Amino acid sequence: MIVAEPKPVKEILEMVQDSKKVLTIGCKGCVTVCNVGGAKEVGVLASTIRIARKKLGIPIEVDEFLLERQCDPEYIDEVKEIIGQYDSVISIACGVGPQFLSERYPETRIFPGVNTQFMGGAVEHGVWSERCAGCGQCVIHLFGGVCPIARCSKSLLNGPCGGSDHGKCEISKDVDCVWDIIVRKMMEQDRMDELLEFKPPKSWTTARDGGPRKMIREELVK
Amino acid sequence: MSEYKSGSNLEKVLKAGHFAFTGECGPPTGANVEHLREKAGHLKGCVDAVNVTDNQTAVVRMSSWAASLILLQDGIEPNFQMVCRDRNRLAIQSDILGVSSHGIRNMLCLSGDHQKFGNHPEAKNVFDIDSTQLIYTVKTMRDEGKFLNGQDVDVPPKLFIGAASNPFAEPFDFRVHRLAKKIAAGADFIQTQCIYNMDRFRRFMKMAVDMGLHEKCYILAGVTPMKSVGMARYMGKSVPGMDVPDSLIKRLKGAGKGKVAEEGIKYALEQIEEFREMEGVAGVHLMAIEWEHKVPEIAERAGMLPRPVV
Amino acid sequence: MKKVLPENVKVIQVPCTGRIEILHLLKPFEEGADGVYVAGCQGDSCQYMEGISKASKRVAHVKKVLQEIDIDPERIEVFELSASRGGRFVDVAYEMTERLEALGPIL
View 1 (cartoon, helix red, strand yellow):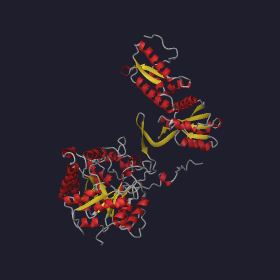
View 2 (cartoon, chains in turn purple, cyan, brown):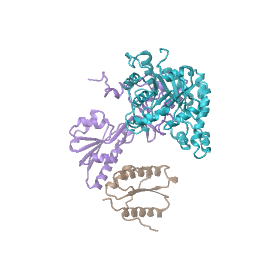
View 3 (tube, one colour):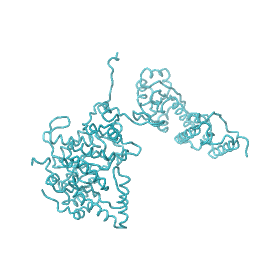
View 4 (tube, chains in turn brown, orange, purple):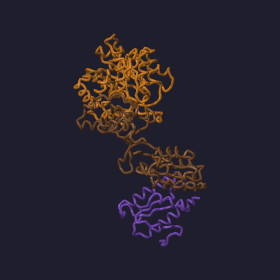
């Protein structure tokens, strides 16, 4: 899923400093799963803003709302009757949410309440780790089911580099060297010959480097 | 001479069967031509080629190609280095043509330290291609006269292709295979990471020789003399992929105050002596970083002088 | 030994401190409280095993939130008590009220 982290409260307070009435909208999708944008987090953010503004002596009205998702126009539509009454809106969905809201409600100031980071999954309770960089040309099966584009700091296809240090990446002891994982896995699976095959330069045209992307399902388009 | 791939001095020395001796020089953190000339000047005549680093440890310095050109103008053969961290394949192929057109004839192909280490950690990561793919790129341009997209290079570059090898990184068993992969991609010569654990290196070389890699590619052993106990400890702990045995640290400590640097040089000289006799080792790459003025003395004491003229 | 709780302490009972959510810790501040504290089992004898440790983590989180909005993090605290020691329950209430008196009102 898409993993995000909350923006510092100070940053959000600065965003709404001129607002007297704000709507905080959460999302039941990915951000609920990684505990940054669901029902609970909407409540906590709204409460935090109220407390902070109370202390500053500039009270603010913060309302709370939760959408099924913020990446489908049908759900974005659900706030159309109420959105006009707010000075600004904070969306704590991933980066898609505030943009969809902005497009649909161009007169309203929409602020992003989280910093969207990566596509990944939970590796332990409360810890999410990056797994996919959305390169548009998935070849993890060539690397023992592991992605070197997303998980190698240098996106090497013929790794490891000389900085691999006891299974950890040179950039930090908290980051696994994915090539160490790939090599060990494939050596264990007796796939040395595949490891030694030269991987030619990647085409980045299907990645973000090629420009903003669209995915179309012809059979669904009206 | 068509028998040479590039005609560089390093290539000629190695091909003639001499034990090669290369050095290193880092460009300045400014357009400080004087300082560069002074540093490189120490190495003149003592080594067959001088590595010119490329934004080493992701710290911005005068570009390797520019510094290499200055060395060339001073009659010193450069070993131009290029990392994959800062350039995409367009800039890479373009620079390959650029350096070759100026008479630079050696090129070392490296991944490059991650920018997190350096002085511009906010920079965008390039890594469009990796070091093995870079080796392949130079080889394709030189031997097939083609760019990566298959189009013709109107005049192919002439470069002796180098790569780095770290025999000490994990997993150890895979390291020699990674070396084989780089050689298969087109590496003509290899310089290893600096060696302190001789035992481990002997094992590595044995594997390399068993695979016949020394016949396909010239392997140069990396040597960096330890200047102090602090340096030995730092390198062992903080530099990725470095293996510094406790016995060496002990030896340096035992040398006594003021005598550690000399002990470090003695160790390096012993290493060079052994490398000369070690099967599969075609030369030594001496990295006396910020100690360039010591190179003539080390070269002399190691019996490396005079350098052969081919 | 004091036997009566201070007048300005409002007690909210929960079956286990592990059930206290971050929002429950923030709401009192919204409503005008000068401080909040959680009193629960001791770590090694927690009735529901992990209740107090969860509560402690949430209190730590709220301390950070308060800091970010320029409110002294000392205004929230967690105390581990043995259920049998009623005296300590009252002592802790005084400890907290004294701390808050020293800090003064938020507004």
